[in-house]
Each structure stands twice: as structure tokens, then as C-alpha cells.
Length: 389
Image (cartoon, rainbow, N blue to C red; front, side, top):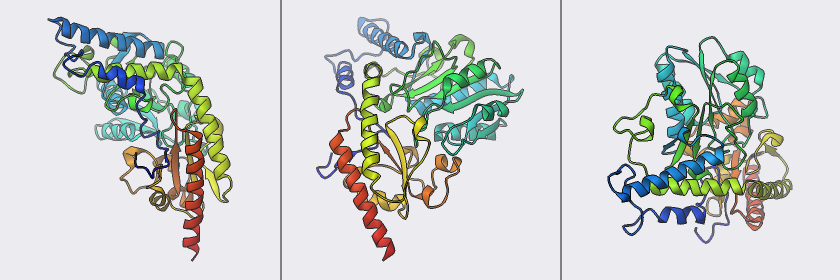
């Protein structure tokens, strides 16, 4: 990190790897370690790698409270979302031609749904209320006899707003409709008990909970009955749903990070609540501060805030050499369009174009939050003064 950077506050984009996850990964990289291809079952090297992957699958399943055979390893939540939605609709087109999702999903879900629309699938995009929540009535009213799948994120990646996926799952199960959850921002941070919640498909990414980039998984409830079609062909790995040589080092590292995250869940959440309150106190010294999204329904490590008279681009430029924050999803960082998430919540005008996301986590210190808050306040005051001259 450059010496002049005071704080990295973009944990929602990616998190630093936990030392425990780094240690786990290093055991499967070099010629003196267990580097073999897990599909090479003819020799003990491959068998040992396969055993490590089996253990990692068991660890992931233990944290999610599910059957290990229902875990499919992927390159991350984007691939998992595509496999869940595309794969499900390819397998179930004869049973329904309608998907229900929301207008503020991650692009990997929205773009996937738009592709399916071009193939003749009908998609309903629900809009949340001003706090960022979907009502149960809005979900149920959108269902039709043709609805095959509902796909909703658990925790929003820009506002941190959390949906009651357990309640939604039970309602959809009673109607015989499949439910996919994008849990990229919630896995490892809040409890997810798949033995109690009848969720059919659930996506996650390791790099959101201090694991490595480029690895994730898709939970598929009752895998043999789910009827998913693969998106890739070329091997029998992952029960034929996701071919390709399994990256043992990434998989065991993800499992180590997830096990640690589940064990530290309460401690990490308490730490982030303290940091969030500190940040709100510091920024509360400014006039014209707007917190976007209902604060009572948000996880503690993501806040979305706008400052009257200050555009997000100007603020990010003013802070880029000292504070790492963002104007929304990292997948949209090159886009000039305003946030689809905030727009779906009915936020427009200066508040929309001035919104920034501040996210933190396990390794963020109180000093970093204090310094970052002060730097943001100074930048806002300076930019407002320049605008008035």
C-alpha cells in the first residue's frame, strides 16, 4: 500500500486475504507440496489433492449447513449466478418461461436476465422501497403460473441492505417456485443455515470473506433433482456441471477463509458496528449528509452516503491518493451511468450522482476510520467552497 494511503475502505469490492487462507493456499502450490491434479486418480499425488478438495467441500458445507454433494466449485459468484440462472432455465424451459428478480441486482444477474429475455424468457424486475427493501407482497404479486425462478440478492453490494431470504424462501417453496440467492456480500458475515431455509440455489465468492480471488461456489439443493444444465463442456468435474481442472490451492484457501469467517462472525460484526458508528459520528459534523438505504436493515460493514453540493467523481478524485472508497460496484467502476441500485430505490438528482460507498471489515482499525472520516470532511468542505466561488 502506498505510504500516503490512510485507509482502504472498499471491502465490498474485495477483501485482503486472511493469513490463514494464505497459509492454506501455499501448501498446494510448489513441487514440494501437494500440487497435483485432483482428477489424476491413478496415483497418490492426485488422490491426495482430491482428498483435500473433499475436505474443503465438507468445510464449506459445514458453514452453510448443507450436504457437501450440493456444493459446486466455480470461479466466483458471477459464474455461479450465470450457472444458477441460465443453467436452471435451460433445464426447465418446458415448465415455466418467467423469472422474477429485482432492478437492483448485481450486473451478473441483470445481464444474465437480459440475455434470457433475448431468448424469449419473460423477466419481471421488482423495485424496492425507498429503504432498499422488497416487500413480500411485491414478490408474491409478481408470480404467475409461468414463473419458474425467483433470483434475489441477500445483501445489496452498494447499500448493505439485507433481505429476509428465509421468509421469502418458505413462501416460494409453498408455491413450488425455485429460489436463487446471490449471497456474495453476506456469506461469512451473517448466518446462512440452508438446513432451515429452503433455498434452491445460492452463490458466493471467496474474495468477499478474506479468501482468494477467482474461486467461489454454487450451492444446488437436491442436485440430482435440480435439472441444471452446464454452461461449459469438456470434462466430468463437479458432477458434470462445471468442467475444468479444479484449482486445489484456491479451493482449500477459500474453505479456510470461510471457516474462519464463520467462527469470527459475531466478533467481526461487532467490530464493524463500532467502526460504522464512529464514521457516522465523524461525518455527522457536516451539514447536508444523506445516508442511502434503511440503516436498520443493513449489515454493518457497508454504508452508502451522499453529500449535498459534492459530486461522487469530484470527491473520489480528491481522495484517491489517501482514501480508497468507491462510487458503487467495482464491476461498474468504468461506467458513467449513475447507480442502478439507488435509482431503483427512487433516489435521483444530486443525491444520486453524489453517492459514494464506504466499506470496511476485519482488518480496518479505528484510527483508519477516524483519519478517513476527517479526510472526507475536509474534502467535502473544500469542494463545496470551490463550487461556491
